[in-house]
Image (cartoon, rainbow, N blue to C red):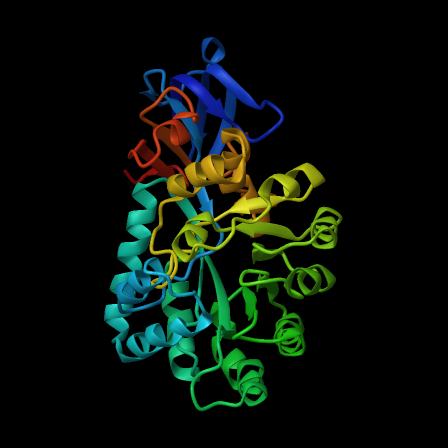
Length: 385
């Protein structure tokens, strides 16, 4: 192993007991962070990197993306901006294009999206299937996503494809389709929403995931009040995502559970949905994550910095809360915040995922929204950008 010390860190976000340090240093050895502390106390290492007084923080953990797709839905976006209401039905356009794409084309598209996310500071991401909606394309999407080596979620229950009865399609998802994707996925997800799957159908999908040894995730409470949060908490889902329409009971349920409320602010801007009650969730004690929801229809971005800025400027989070939610919050939502090589923080024992901002503090992420502030990125100790 070759250790590297990062010196002259103006502001270091650790997401741990040390909080935020100034005039700090840290040491990476291989894939791990092995030391964190004051710059004047930094130990010797094989090499040194002078940060020049800039801010260092963990790499973004993007816990909700849909990267396995082909095609373009800018026409749908333009129609929404002209006043049309968002519905779940636009997904079917992406299904047609994704089914028609070759495996090499789909792999190349995913690789470029991941590369773009990496250079913008994302060092870990989850991605979902869900633009196949048949056994062959869902299996291919899961297999290709697994080649990139991070979290893969099975979202065969995205919408009901044309020509199918909803209950018959749920039987396909929970039977042959689940069997086909099972070697490649860690999570089961369902779009529990009007226009997609009702409570009984969503429960059947999630229970099949549990029975197959998969962790659970839920798309819920995006288009209106519904059972998504209640179902997610009842079944012990790791996260329930969107959460735009919550009542006080939903907030209390999340606060009393280990289920993370994953908020998707870029999607809310694109769909012109009301923002979720982020401030109320945090004040109640719920765990909140921020994610990009990168997808072709409602949130075509991999920029977690944009999501952080939006959460601060529009959802009333502090910069520090938004950064935590986009790093450690995402790690908790993926259950990657503890164990052998945890992510989401910069503390001894954590995976060496970090980014250097071209700014003296994380405040500049919201103070200068839209600026490209990520100057350098390390993933598992290897410099990416």
